[in-house]
Image 1: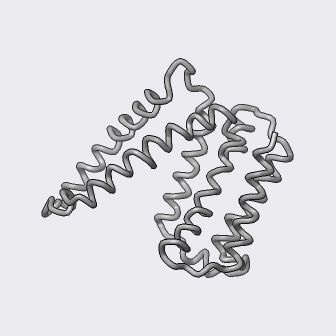
Image 2: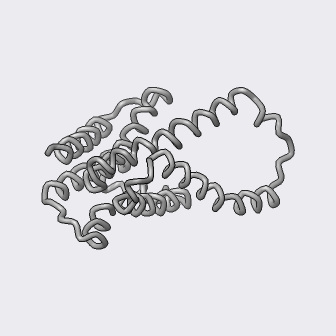
Length: 191
C-alpha cells in the first residue's frame, strides 16, 4: 500500500528493487499465514471481522506513514506523537462512553491490581509512545517506501513469540517465511 500511495499520491519513483523486495517479503508473510501451503483454502475460512479491521488498520497506517513527509519539520517528534495521541483519545472518547453505557462495568477491582496497572503502563510507554516516536524518526530518516517493509517483521516476531512463549513447535514454514522476510528486508535496506 505504501508503494502505491507514494506512487499515486506523491508521484515517487519506485525502484524495481523496492518492488522485488516488497514482493519477496510479502511472499514470506503470506507463506507464514498459509503455513507453507498456498493451496490450503481453509486458512481463508478462518478470517473474521477482527482480521478485516486489522486490514483496514494496515491501510490507514500506510496513509499515515506516507503522509509523514508533509509534517512540518519544525514540530518535534515528541510533540507530534503527543498531539496525535491526544486527538486519537478524543476521537475514541465518545465511542468508549457509548460502550460503557451499553456494557457497564460492575467492579473496578481487576483494574486496580498491580498486574493490570503494570501492563497498562507498559502499553502506554513502549508500544504506544516510544514505538511511534522511533517509527516516525525512522520514516523521516529513510522514507516510507524503504521503512514500511519493516512492518513485515510484525508477523515474524509474532511467530517467534508464539514459539518462545506458547511452546509452538518450529515448523519448516516458519524457517522458510523468516528467510523470505529477512532477505526481502535486507535487500530493500541496502543503499
